[in-house]
Image (cartoon, rainbow, N blue to C red; front, side, top):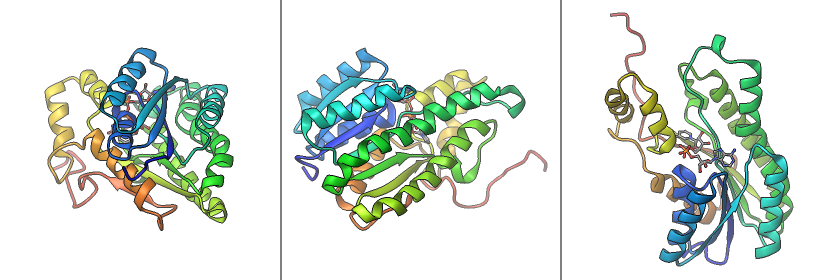
Length: 262
Ligand SMILES: NC(=O)c1ccc[n+]([C@@H]2O[C@H](COP(=O)([O-])OP(=O)(O)OC[C@H]3O[C@@H](n4cnc5c(N)ncnc54)[C@H](O)[C@@H]3O)[C@@H](O)[C@H]2O)c1
């Protein structure tokens, strides 16, 4: 109940890491969590399930974060209905299928920037007047690949690198208002997005096994583990700002095979 009486917004909360945040903030934090996605059915189902478990409450609002007006409505309605915003978790994002730069169009890149990056900027901009009143905090979901790179993912990695850099710059400005701004950079967390990659692979079983083996801990992370790191940042890590929190099971540690040359 360590986030009781606090109001949190989670974008892209109907499944995956966002859903992990919704569940943990409601169940372990006792918070009020307003979450959005484009999928009304999934959102309503999670809302009902989280409210059945309590002790906090979940409220689903349909919003497409690639539309700035939807983001503004999400923030304004949350503030009007609940009177405050203590935490914003920018999470909604997408990883396109892997391919070389030659196969991405300029338009592909622009639309991914809108979805993955401009949406975070807009949500921060609209929520900050409310966050400043209560000395709240922002958590931006970035990715481990922002610092490591990733094959066939130039557009995605560029959006995530920008999110991590944006997080630091915003933390510098907002410290004056005692608003903390942190990034979380997951490695492999098993979610529907990861399952999409498995389904698209030539050998899905091998793809899943490789995904598990990429971590020193020998498995992918869970959505609840991601939610718990976010609750820690929001509720407990009160002297932490501008930090990129890696959640990777040790994926970035130790030397490993990088080429096929023997
Ligand atoms: N899963 C991983 O291993 C991993 C690793 C690094 C970073 N991430 C990042 O974590 C975040 C969540 O990833 P995930 O794996 O849970 O993805 P996911 O596809 O499983 O879930 C994404 C969520 O965002 C929502 N969403 C997508 N587009 C939206 C839009 N336009 N408007 C509103 N909601 C939208 C979906 O409905 C869903 O609720 C993303 O930003 C992703 O880049 C994930």
